[in-house]
Image 1: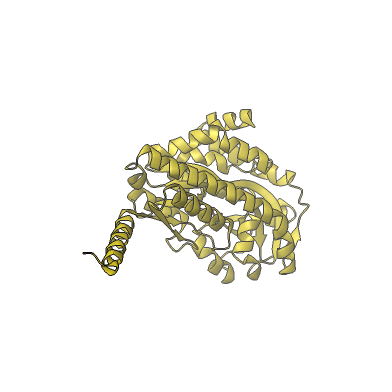
Image 2: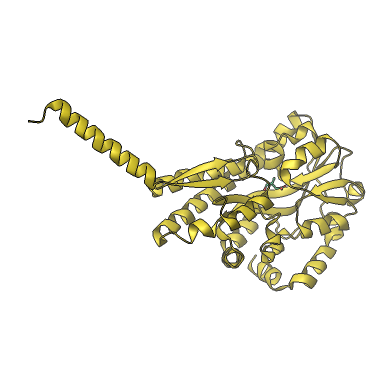
Length: 326
Ligand code: PAF
């Protein structure tokens, strides 16, 4: 006869076996990005994790790796291609080196405001660009957001292109951005983001350009005195997946990843909008001079040749489509 004790032991053993089975079945997903765990990318990473784990009922477990702990964005994109990373939230900075079609999004002054940029990325052009990633050993899951980029530096207030002349400015590893800064008369220095803080601290470069969200999340006020709201380029972010993981999934599982990426993008965009408003005040409190009413027309005029150089190399089809759709 079974005693109560043996019955309980039996139930416990069965429960343990089930837990072990579930634990065995769970696939760990490595998600990387370069910003701190208080950043808009981390808000997006948390939303990705919450959504995927909920939809898959624990079949997938997401491990977040913020702060460039898996390397810079270029290195992480390479990681997706060889399967050492599963999901990455990245700006388009280094992406053009892998998917040249995305360079169009890096053209200066292409978008006027957040509404226009988000609409193009969520529309046909954006979706076609995500699909293009598939031709380059990447899976484009969703367009997320970094934000409009502004110039900071340690030397002087920048009110006009004249003031930017001669400044050594770190740019992303992106030829369109480098060309734009060359046209401004600055000295562009491409560099991976994880090296940037030290480079600013040691004076290897005078300045950098990034959205308010990044300037806040990275404490750049400690090493940069001046911020000019040049808004010279909208910086999208992409949620990318590794084909090595995603190609082996069922349609249902793939859809969980798509939905998690969409939730991630939505949460990130909300955080960008919030910080755009609150961040400037915070940066002033931290001692930065913030020039808000920059006349951007002369900047736009100065970087115009970047368009010609871009179209000579990549044609004008994507650019025309963006202009027609926005
Ligand atoms: O400047 C960059 O490299 C990017 O804007 C950053 C900060 C890594 C976010 O994608």
